Length: 252
Image 1 (cartoon, rainbow, N blue to C red):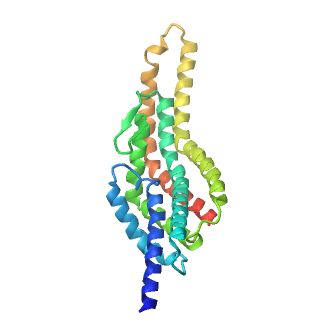
Image 2: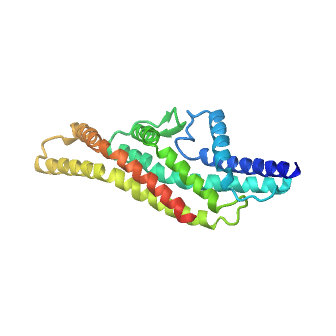
Image 3: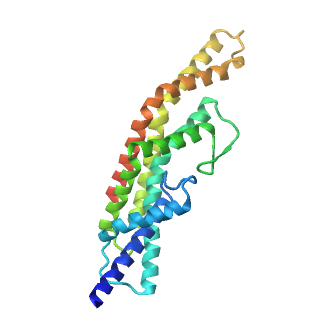
């Protein structure tokens, strides 16, 4: 009877610590962190996922209250750290949309995006919602959760060092800038060629007032380029998910 109670207490402590890590991770990673996901749903999902991942957490005995609090703080740092690395990679799509809005002349006054409660231009908001939809539709959110499960096999209940997180932050930042250029680069190149053509037209026909229709031409070219580039957005989100998983795997 005493052995069963001890094993039950260990299992409860494992589930609690695992749920804390999952909740910290879900509070950062899209689409789980979006404001349209109620906090109660996020907390319930973290308890369910934490209970499923708890057998992977190497906890042999029930720690003291002080040790349990210290381990819980470590789980928060681990979950938030891995979540921040994943979010930085996925934010490349939103950064690409913002860059396209700035370069293509579609910049409107900063608006509050109702789902994420963040301020971004119209294209940035569109790309953010497209990222959420593609993650859910393609099962990318489940792949990200699977990547979180793998962290329980390596990082136990106690936090030993934050050095891997610092290295991962540099890699995630570099990946974000590279992926932003990959998503927005071709469309920006089309816009640049359109502006170059307008500049040559202004040079060849100085009597024509290019400024009367320059911005209209830019916007039309951008809209057509976005329509043609929309087909590559699912592949881009899929590659970003794989990069996020690869980045987490490199730290394990």
